[in-house]
Image (cartoon, rainbow, N blue to C red; front, side):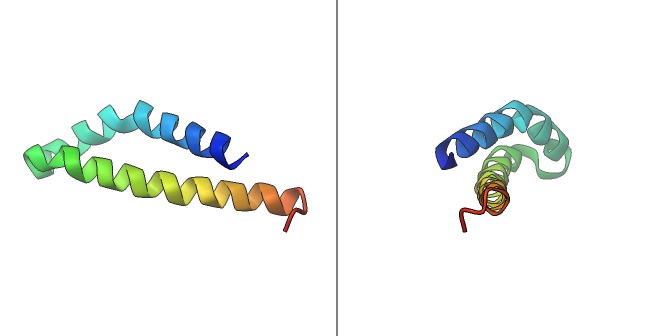
Length: 62
């Protein structure tokens, strides 16, 4: 389940990456690409771990 949720979050981050980069580009210029990758990577890890915790609480695994 962990890998499926992580893969789904990575796919979601990939889908919105162009919009995030285009929104950040006027303020950051060429720095928008690396900053967006770092932010999306960290957000993906955090969100996927929180989703897994919620599923585990619902299924009473923990």
